Structure formats: C-alpha cells, structure tokens
Length: 96
Image: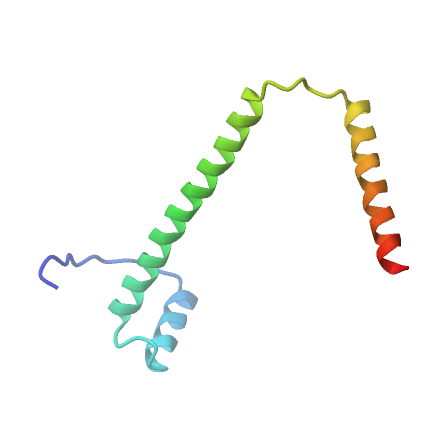
C-alpha cells in the first residue's frame, strides 16, 4: 500500500473490542484491514444516502412542477375512500 497514510484514531472501548473480536475470529487479517473495510462501508452508505436524497428531491420537483390541479383535502379524502372501496370490492370478489 504505497499511497497509504497512517492516522491515529480514538475510539470507544466497545468499538475497538468489536473490531478486535472480528480480527481474532479471522474475518479480517488485521485491525487496519477491518478499519479500511469500515471506511469503505461508510463511503458506500454516504453515496447511497446521497442518491436516495436526490431521488426524493426529484420527486418533490416533479410534484411541484406537476401541471394537474391540486386537490382540496375533501377531494383527496374522497379519492382515497373510493380507492379503498375499490380494493375492498376486489378482495371480496377474490375471497368468493
């Protein structure tokens, strides 16, 4: 690892114990390997979080830009009740 940089990290005793246990169990060859794996997982999670957030923002933008007229609360309730009634009818027919 030619481009490696050595760092010093302070961790809670329980966290270090968990890492040492994984090394002793053979999951990792060294504590350093376990720490690199943890950083890779952290990096991947941040990318996934950013992608999810962008997807949410895109849905919000599409909703805001939707040219269809907005529904009042009463209209939304009526539409939901009609949809639920339709589902109930389908379930009743399937059960028969």
